[in-house]
Length: 241
Image (cartoon, rainbow, N blue to C red; front, side, top):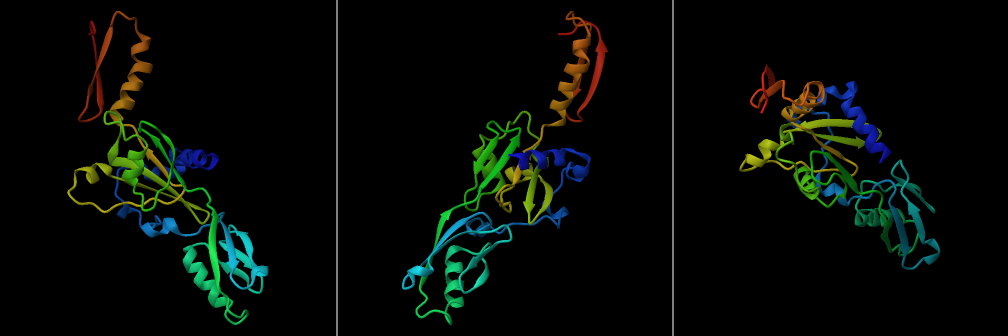
């Protein structure tokens, strides 16, 4: 959760101001896209058991290190992160081929590192949700209760991604996704942060309420009008309604 808060503060701070404008993913070619099948891949922090059919003394239990590797007898370091369990099984079998007679083994996933994303902002139930296989941005928002139609700015939904020690941010226009007959899905990665911002009209109403309305008596000495199409406010004196 500390990571989520830090990254969100970065988003709202000056260092991430380039994500505030409404844009499409194609404007951010450096943003690392995640293939949908990657959710099922092993990653740092996962716990695995390696069981040998004919060599039980070689059985081992490992947690994948932050560098994505495990250390095994006779092999030293082996890359595990980024592979499916069956792919790691096949790779280890090959590596032990010239070291053991009948090196038949199984890779069993004992535990998984955090597989969650954080959805915050103008959704009805913000918080962490479990990352399902091939989960898209829109599916994550729906799993968080859906967006508030009266306050959510769907043309500027922000996604933060942490990958290999670096943070990336992009903004996507979900409004176009909702009205288009066909659209390309945006797949999420573990620990992504999704922020659905408030519309400018709502923020302006809050500002007027806090800094204008409360400064005058309750007799309605001043009233204000907000133009929804532009987000501009105008004030006029007289009895308010």
